[in-house]
Length: 358
Ligand SMILES: *Cc1c(COP(=O)(O)O)cnc(C)c1O
Image (tube, rainbow, N blue to C red; front, side):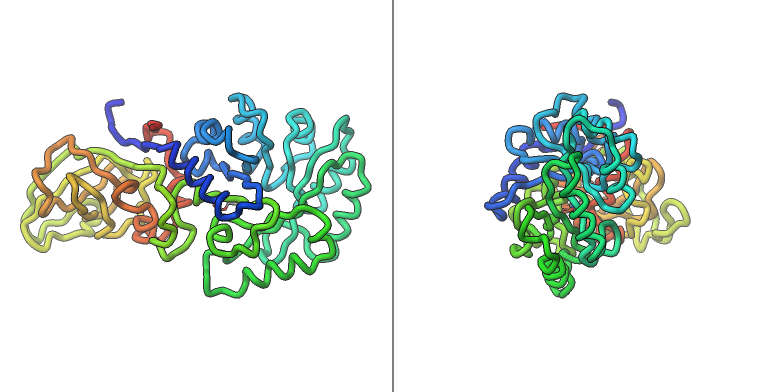
C-alpha cells in the first residue's frame, strides 16, 4: 500500500456497541443491520466479529446475504430487509433459510405461489407513516390473513419503520407506534419497530426485535451530534501529508480558488479526495486532526486530494498522518460540515481506501 489512505476499523468497538444496544433493550432480540457492506465497515468482518453475540443480521438484498453465507456465516438468521426483488430469489431464500420482508402485494403473491419444500419465515411490513415500503391498513390485515393460511409460510413477525425517530421533538414516532398498535395483529405476533434512534430514545418501541444500524458503528443517529456518549467510534479514516507549501496573502487554493489566503499561510496537501469517499461538499473550516491538534480544510475537495491549513500545527512534515474522522474528530461533526449524514460518508467509501482491522 503506497498511498496511505486508510480506514482503520476497530471490530471490538462494533461488538461493544452491539452489546450496548442490547443493554438498552434487554428484553428484545437485536438484528444487527449490516447492509451496504456494514455501512462501509466490511460486512463479512463485522458479521464474524458479532457471530457469538448477534441474534440475527439484516441486509438489503440477497446478494448481501449470499456473500455472508459464502464466507461461512450460516448459523445466524439473516433478514432481507426489503424482501426479494424477483420471484426466482425464493429458491435461494429457501435453500439458505433466509427470512424475508414482505412489503407489497407482488412479494406476497410470489410467496403464496412458490413451490417450496420448507416454509419461509417472514417479516410483514406495515406502513405506519413512513410512506415508503409496507402495506397500508386493510391490505396489511389481508396480507396477514393470506400468509397465515399458506403452507409456504413459517414464523410471522410484523415490522414497521420510523420516519423521524432521530427528531426528538417530533410527534410522528408516537403516532407511528400507536398506528402500529392499533392494527389488529400487533399483539398476536412478535413485532419489530426500532432503528438506532428508537433504541436510544423511544423505549416504548423496543418490543420483540430491535434493528440497530448506525449505532453499531459508533455514530449518532441524532443531529445533536454529541448525544450518545456510550457509543465508540469504530472507524478512523486517515491519510498522510504529501506536500507542504507556503502561500502569500491573497493567493487562492485549489479548484475555483475557493479559499483565498487571508494572510501568509502554510498549506498541507492530504492524499484523500472525493474518489475515496471524502465529500466534495466539505466547506472551508471542516475539521481534520494532525499532530495532536485540530486543523481545517481550506479550499475545495479534489478527486484525490484535499488542502488543509497548517497554521499553528506543530512541526508538520510530509508523511505525517492526518485523521479525517474517527478517534479525535467525530464523523457526525464532519458530516454536518458536509451537509450530509455519517451513513452516506461511510457507505461511499470506495475500494481505493485501504481497510485495516484492529
Ligand atoms: C437500515 C435500516 C435500519 C437501521 O437504521 P439505523 O438508523 O442505521 O439504525 C433499520 N431498519 C430498516 C428497515 C432499515 O432499512
